[in-house]
Image (cartoon, rainbow, N blue to C red; front, side, top):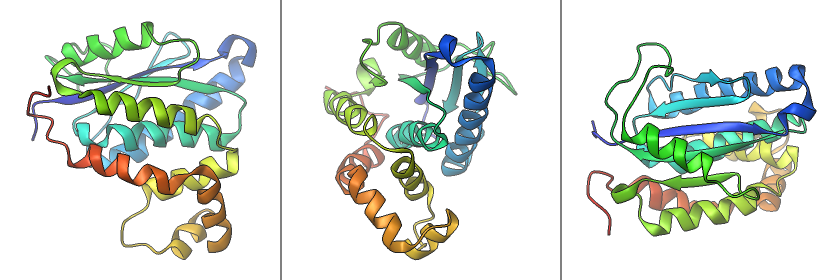
Length: 215
């Protein structure tokens, strides 16, 4: 296993206006999304809620950073709650991870992720940083998919989430059946969301060697 990990630190946008019920429902969606990411990584992501509208997850496979962030974004968009989340992805080392949650965890990746969220521009929802472990091209891809994902309709977001999470052995018809639509409807939604354009970015992230220092 790599000694480099990824931490997602996020918070809800517009939580004060949304009201407590909507915030709680959004957090429930994000917790379910974190479980989907955990299934991808085959490891507990330890979803932890902070300060009412903040949250964090642990991912010991940095190569899944883009897929994981898009899954969290798409799941919340599909819920159509009128609320979004910012996500700062920090890649680095960890000193301590709690057995159940992340409230007492520490390490470089946590610091990087927290600082990235604090410094995130108001118009951004997705950023990634990692000092020596995250090359410039990854930050650029995150900026592009940030713009792209902000334009998904709830139906498109649902389709993207299903496609991102699907077992590679499933057909489009089988993926469509999981969310109760036809294959044609799934493919139309994915086309509208620009899903095909994500393929190269996902492949680049998932084939990158995170144990090597990037230049």
